[in-house]
Image (tube, rainbow, N blue to C red):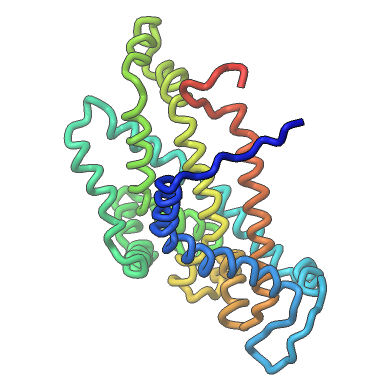
Length: 310
């Protein structure tokens, strides 16, 4: 057999490649310094006994941190809290922006541009300030939400201090920031060819038929995108409870999320090796769930232009 030799790059091609690498070098250096190297370092930490809370000589401990993780009841309790909250918040985070985008995309709605601006405005409010404002709005005695419920004769709950209502309260706080999801869904709706709706109407499809047979299939890539991002975000959820009650897990441990336990292990207990082990467990769980989502995408995500045999 004759070995095929790669053609040598011309001087112009080499100059262009070198220029491209030069322009990419800030990103490459940033990726290596702030992503790849720290990831590899944390994996190495999981096999050591690094701790900042006491002066202990560094040594290799093998799988001791992983064994301690599986024996730690707080790990499984915090994972259960995270998954319980995800079961409530994730459907809202995916369905509500899509529904609002449908409404804003309606031809009968006037002033949709103004509503888009209003929905996106919370993004310019500092995060901590926004959470503190919502904590007052959800106050059981003086909050506006319970005040409005009282006007219609409904006794409002203690949103943030009742274990049965704290998850709906946190979901309400999260609804405040759906503006980004609305814009993404609206961009997807604008990309659906109007000819498909015209054909559906000619075939006698009403609003529901057009939604089911045109809008949902054409929007399935956007829905898949928001679902994957929503899973990643909800598994890393901890900033809101950290601001509300300094990560104490109140009421009754209902807000002791996994990422909050990971954060306190790193920065409060200063157990760097065990915290790195917790971080890798979270990474593997996130990887497994997103892997299942990507596997299932072949059955319900439709990409325009792909062949039916693919």
